[in-house]
Image (tube, rainbow, N blue to C red; front, side, top):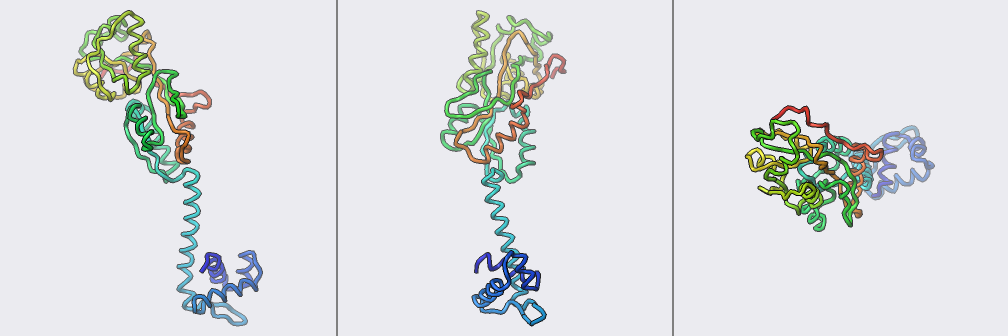
Length: 313
């Protein structure tokens, strides 16, 4: 039995007229009559009761009709499934992200992506640059959001696009003497113990922070290192030192921590979306979706307002 025969059978069963069924199938009546007869011979049953004036379904034909419709519908579904997968509308996207973008626009991007492409399964992994690069090399990641210094988002062997640009702001204990000032003197800040991430997880940004100290002839006193931004903020709340964090992290209102914007520092960071050139269609769809939300083709990057007037934690 062929799909063509099932379509012919359904057409005749629904029209109950060989002439109308042939017209619907864009064929002439004699080949259709012969095809139905061949189907009946192959099944060993009579599907239609024919007279000179009428065509009616036999009991066997009546039983076959709903199943034939179901099979044809399944075939159409498989066709749409294959086309959707080819266009990136189905599949699994393994996405890495740094914690800072999780406090920023990432949740909204993921929500809108699910709404547009509900057939794509998102497998999310919070990971720093070094972990993401290892996952890419092992074939375990398709795309990732990474944090870096401005202009340092290009990595050999990857395509990338800047999706967020923001200043680094100062996080300091709320009971610290410098917390009483909206703009603490930079020299006083640089003399404080520094809580920072290890260089290996964001080399360009680490170097940019230390370059600030070097530019002011000051050697940083690193009080503690921590990988995750939320851990860094927690260490600041415990009085371990001060920290430079992306402005999006100010959404993490940890008790015991205040944030201050110090324009004099000149520190900033960027978040880029990173993906391999040898990507799957589902990656194309995600890149296009984020690109449209960011408006990067027209130069618009999401940024966060100054925290000068934000309430203290």
